[in-house]
Image (cartoon, rainbow, N blue to C red; front, side):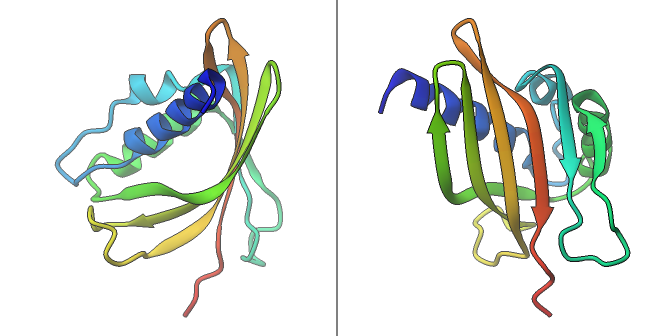
Length: 140
């Protein structure tokens, strides 16, 4: 594994680590904001819900504030469940199939979907410049 591969994986892992935790665990919004670069954007894409016809766009700070408010009292764990990574000199793209649950052992998966991370190199670090995510259709 190259240094760039390790650094990109570290950033994506930090994202998942900072959104995950038990209900009594207040999320670290500063650490979560820290994986994003200045000017980063986040898009929630409504892939399967016909009532939502357009993606919702927000800046990373708004996304982090919204996410930490909703997760601070929730038992929620999300992890990378496989995917593909491409790394150039200053840009990287990670297709990450996510799995989420309220079970820290991931014995039962409640939701799956896709997180598409686009990262940029800033000095020796890799930061998320954009995140597009969609949840898979409800299997029921």
